[in-house]
Length: 161
Image (cartoon, rainbow, N blue to C red):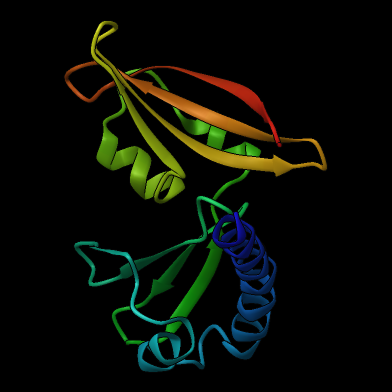
């Protein structure tokens, strides 16, 4: 009982402090001035990295499952910070279309909070927390067929407690 209580308090503290740390670290980074090394020093190693043909890098910094943000940090071929994007937005959710693959969705929205497999439906569902209220959490869901292609999106809420 005490272990569960302590774990709950600790996870709550971490969830509360992460956004504060991100705000402090992100405010210290300046597009066009900060280097890739400075970004890594402040933000740590990215969870995923993509490289475009022009040499631009996109680094993923997810804050899921407890957070409501996922960051994509863009590093130019000149090794300077170009942009910081918070990708869990209504605009990006609207870009999800049937036929897109898992890699495209990961690059668009970042690491999901949860990944579930439903063998009878032959479906995988990824979700991202979009809003957290006192009594419930809201999620955006992407449904994939057995070939890893988007078939639909949905949303749901989970009651806390």
